[in-house]
Amino acid sequence: MIVEIDRLGTNGEGIFIVPEGEQKGKICFVDFALPGELVDVEIVKSKSNFCVAKLNKIIKYSENREIPICPFFAHCGGCDIQHMKKNFQIDFKKNKVIKTLSKYLNNLDNIKFIRLNDLYYRNKMVFPFCNKNGQACLGMYCKNSHEFVDINYCYLTSENINKILKLSKDFFSKNKFDAFDEKLNKGILKYLVVKEYNNQFLVSIVCTKLINVKDFYKILNSEFSEIGLSLIISNSNDEILTGEYIHLYGLKQLSIEEFGINYNVNILGFLQINNAIKIELYNNVLNEISYNDVVIDAYSGAGLLTAIIAKKAKNVFGIEINSSASKSSKELAKINNLKNAKFINSDVKDVLIDYLQTYKSSVLILDPPRSGCDKKLLNKLIETKNISFLPKKIIYISCNLMTLVRDLEILNKYYDLQNVHALDMFPQTKHVECVSFLNLK
Ligand SMILES: C[S@@+](CC[C@H](N)C(=O)[O-])C[C@H]1O[C@@H](n2cnc3c(N)ncnc32)[C@H](O)[C@@H]1O
Image: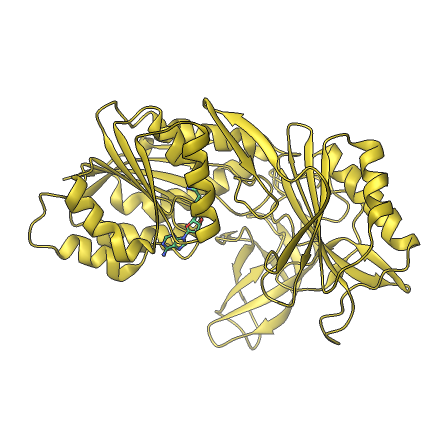
């Protein structure tokens, strides 16, 4: 059927109301179609309250449409919105933030949108292996599936990581290694993980058993002087970076110096994906901290943000559940001689209220995973009888608008949302990172 696209959905897909036929009146989602476009579509999935259509042809183009730079766009699952012009991508993300958070803001001008780069921003890539014509091949997965796409370049990452992808594809196709087949639960190579910082590179092969890749390292090292190779022996089909870590050759970790802090990150450690936006994010947080603040950094990861805060605040406590990340943060404090930073290896839900009460902290930073904060913990926090220990400020860093709004709804009882900085950590994708600044009412 031929329809006009009405608006965009939260994932950047076009939306229209089915005008005729059996599905008449239902909301319908169509990937890669833009508002105002006249399109020829075909309904491919129908549920009780919505349907999904496939875009066959664009009859009238939107002025906001861009020709995607990548030939694999729409096949590869890495990008969602390369078909939108830059300013339209920004409007799409900004509107999404406004729509979700406007209920909590007095003035919409208090939402600031920051985009610092368009392409080549990712400092880490995970490429899956797949058997193709009897050879192990590297590429990407399609959207929402493990269907393989044989790509030879990714515009979201650096020239150097793309060079490593090319060298790896050449090596593994010539050397008769068997890729892991998820359906048959058989084979060896699962993923190639590459991480980069300032001309230092870490490469790891996720595989099911020990393999001899000395010649592969020689090839990598002939191109890059500061590079390391490791294996992750994995028996899990769900988690990519779990398993036995075995360092093989060269560099073991990336050495980084930022904000006056020296730190090391290995292939398993957390590093924000977009370096420029990471610096903006940490500066945004730092601007809110003053010299006599006592800060609790809940969900502190490997402690980089906590350490940066320690340089400015009176005292800071980092709470992290992952023991290896917590251990790294303790080392970080030692290397940088940070006497005012303490790290607690615990679940935030078990210790946060005690720490808030004992140390009367003035700022609480929440930087939870996509699933958001523990709902029971937030309820406990705001249902408490004696509210004198509640921090004056909360800075909530979130990569998931849905869980952010769920948590703001609870915090709203005692906290006003003042400003939101929406950071484009992942250009060309539907995702947006938000830093929300809340003040005690
Ligand atoms: C988004 S990362 C934080 C990154 C860190 N703020 C930084 O900038 O480097 C979220 C962290 O929360 C940790 N985490 C998840 N659930 C937790 C919990 N219940 N208690 C404490 N930490 C948790 C994860 O292990 C992860 O390191």
